[in-house]
Length: 445
Image 1 (tube, helix red, strand yellow):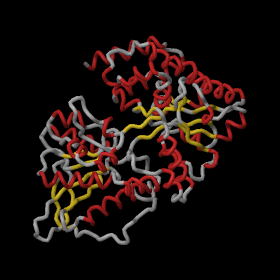
Image 2 (spheres, rainbow, N blue to C red):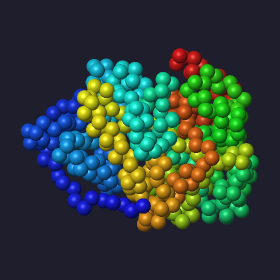
Image 3 (cartoon, helix red, strand yellow):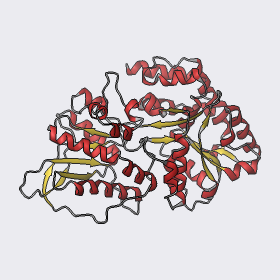
């Protein structure tokens, strides 16, 4: 898939300032008095190119859309310095006064329940059902983001594609079978034991995101565990045998096999697990496809790092693909403005833009129209090639489940994360964890 970049970017004359519904000061393009309809799009890709190159590429993609349609409508683009979290917090505050962004990218921060409950956002499902290309472009978001009453308030141009990474050289050094050969979780256990016996840390973790990834992967091991996991936010109690087995596995087969130097009890803010993997000090990394961007020139050697899917005990391979909350559109816009927003979403989920997102190492896309085999032939950088390979690998998974937080909700995710340190040091038992999670569920009702 060739990367088609417009030969020139036409600068919009930014002349009139105003305050958006979300309370941010932005600049509106001069419409020359011709009364063009106007929409303001807010996103979190504010980073300088030297800080994070993908942000600059995303801004470029946005601007190209504005330039293509400058004679039809004014598309204002605002980068929120607070990122996706800042956009989410602003939206929460503004809902109380009845305000909402025209269109914003929430980058995984789920505003939909609060905004839909306030009647602030529009249902995208009728537009998706009327356009096969658009429906194909949003891929897994169509089913994953559909509410119980059959509405779809948000779709994304990227998904959280998660399996795991391994250092092939360390596995070979330990004489352990590599993950691409595993047929069951017993193979995982055998490999971990060989790595430990060879003095190699099998994995480095914190009490947060990477540990939840492994728990979610193990939860896909058989039909019974998948059935419980799929209940997600509808679960009324964690006192279930499959969940009991999952928590026991995390305690005995994972946490107790990590030495203190490779476990950070502090949670998501502790990034040591990434540094341990890229330095060649641990053999497995539980993180998404985008981690490939951190592998360039790493001490472990990018040529040794490979993507993998989770094994199951019934012959399948599993991955985690979460659409989550992305583009959300105000329901207070005129029909003409809503059409502009839908046109932008269609553009962002088109095969061309999806290809650029993959080829530039930004992330994995939900689109079913992307040819990863073809994309692999057009990417030049080692990290880009590895990301494409990771996306292709995830696309072949027999089971594509939601990630832990998207499945159970952020509150439950946080509660479970808080138990890992206690499971590791033995101050908490599996029964303690189940009891405390059920108490949290009851308190939230």
